[in-house]
Structure formats: structure tokens, C-alpha cells
Amino acid sequence: PMNSRVKATILPAATLLTLFVAAVPVRAQQIAAAPAAKAAIAAPAQPAVTRTIIVSLEDRRLALVENGEVKAVYPIAVGKASTPSPTGTFTIVNHVANPTYYHHGKVVPPGPENPVGNRWMGLSIPGYGIHGTNVQRSIGKAVSHGCIRVGRRDLEKLFAQVRVGDPVEIIGTRDEQTIAIFGAPAAPQSTPAPVLTATNAPAATPATATVAAATMPAG
Image (tube, rainbow, N blue to C red; front, side, top):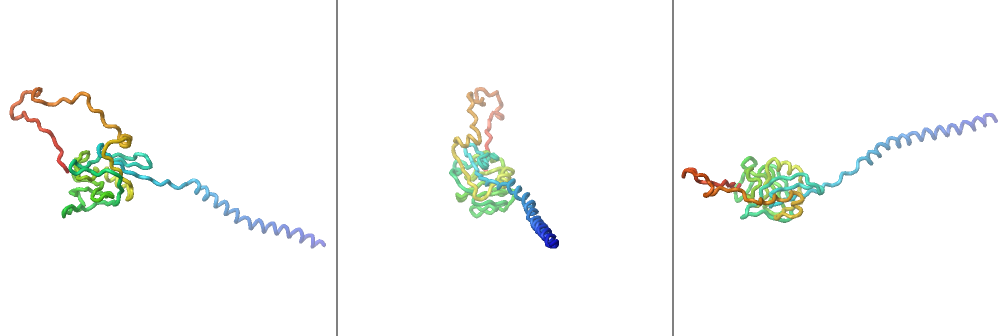
């Protein structure tokens, strides 16, 4: 009878020990999994970036807009009167560094003489794109064959931020959207600026009596 009581006492203890040992790995797994679960909660997925390039022909400026926020504004050159830039909404269809220029049988390899500079972003309207130039002084002018020219440093920054498929909106006439992005144009002067005329010019010898106007050659 004594042995029976001893056995009866030992068996429950052994059972409890077995249950405790079996529970320890489960608890350890739960503790190890807790930091991973917290990390997953603390690092939500990043929202997709929506990019749009806005070009104002009248302002001769380009803006990069991401998720509704203007990230950068760059001065540009646009098409001249005989070869105007197209207006409308397009997309970037190719994205080329150090392009080779082809036009009417003329081939210009990458380099400082390349008319489209060192970056090309082709648009969904054939023959037009956003690119550089080998005539940096043309930026800010209406002198191109219809493409949008950007200065070299600005172009390299823009090129690094945009991707194929990004929309490009080219606006011909200033509107509320362009005013919100680029600001209102400067108000015209109420008094015309003084000009040099025959009546108010100082006396001069024939050799110095000619007034010449500076012009910007098309690039």
C-alpha cells in the first residue's frame, strides 16, 4: 500500500514536468516572433510615387511634380514660331543617356557637339522629346525645332528622377495651373522704359552714331 501511495504521488509530478518541458519551446518561439511582428507593424509599405512633368511654353519653364507637390522647376527653351512645340498630354516612351543624334542623314555621336546634349527623354508624339543642347545660351528662348531643351545640369537632375511612362503635360497658354506652379507673370510697367532716340541722344560723330540691337542666334 505504501508503494502505491508513493507511485501515486510521483506520477503526477512527472506528468507536470513533462508538460513544462514541452511548453518551453513554444514560449520561446512566441518571444522570438514578437520583435518580428512589431517590426512588420512599424514599417508600412511605401506609397507609390505619382510623377508628372508640367511644361509651360509661355513661362518657358518646366516643373517636376510628385504626388501633387512641386519638387523642382527648371528654365527651358521651346519651339520657335515656325516650328512650335506641341501642346497636350504625352508620356515618356524612352530614356537614353548619351544619345546619338540622327537627322536627315546627319549622325552626331555623343559628345559636346551633340545637338540634343547628353540626355534624351522621347515623348509619345514622334520626333519630339525633352533633351539637352550644345547651345546653352538658348535656354529661356523660343528657338528650338519644337522639342523642350533643358540646361545640362538641370537635365541630368531631371533625367535621374523620371521614368518611362511618366506623363508630360505641355501647356501653351498660361492658365490657373501654371500660375499656381510658376507664379503670375510680372505686371507690365506703367511707364515705358526710356529709349534712345534721335531727339534725346547726345551729339555724336558719324562713326559712333549707330545704335545696334543684340540678338540671340537660333541654336
